[in-house]
Image 1 (spheres, rainbow, N blue to C red):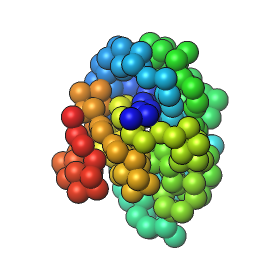
Image 2: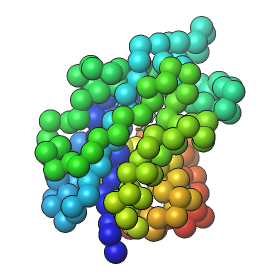
Image 3: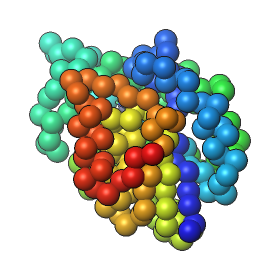
Image 4: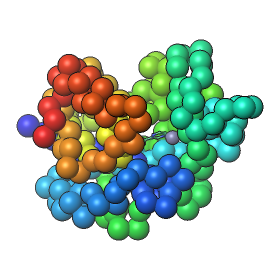
Amino acid sequence: MNTALLVIDVQNDFCPAGALEVARGDEIISDINQEMKKYNCIVLTQDWHPKGHSSFASSHVGKNPLDTIDMPYGEQVLWPDHCLHGSKGAEFHDKLDTQRANAVIRKGSNPMIDSYSAFFENDRKTVTGLDGYFKSLEIEKINLVGLATDFCVNYSAQDAAKLGYKVSVFEDMCRAIDIDGSLELARTAMRASGVELI
Ligand code: VGL
Ligand code: ZN
């Protein structure tokens, strides 16, 4: 089967000392570099927000990180400012072997809509183009790794399954934010969508 590796958001801001630090997020990088050697189709995603993005708590008076707000597309968790386009925090971690990537998908550039998934923005309608990229290369299976298991990996994996790919998440090459049980919820939802957790 024609298989792609999708590496989600291995960026400085999601690693220790980053603005939206995922605990032990940098531990997965050397295994991901090894894994990349097995594929001839590798896509990296990069969370890429403009200043004042609507997913930032700082953009809403009286709100703090991890509060939620109602957006036209549904509930949105608010985050610390992170992955500002062009910033050091938005860059891939230095140790990630980015040379092997065939494509980089940037997401979250629309100031009014967040985008956890590599395929659709959080309105669940606006596409990133990644499905077209994979379909035109006749990719049938997608293996996912990266940050964070319960947000961007979770949304990307479920969307990939809905789009008809066979999907596996390599959990030992992912790390979670895990707020209020979000990791277990994500694992249950991924399994229910037909995603294989390895
Ligand atoms: C992510 C929250 C906000 C992620 C991105 O990569 O999981 N989480 N932006
Ligand atoms: Zn983000």
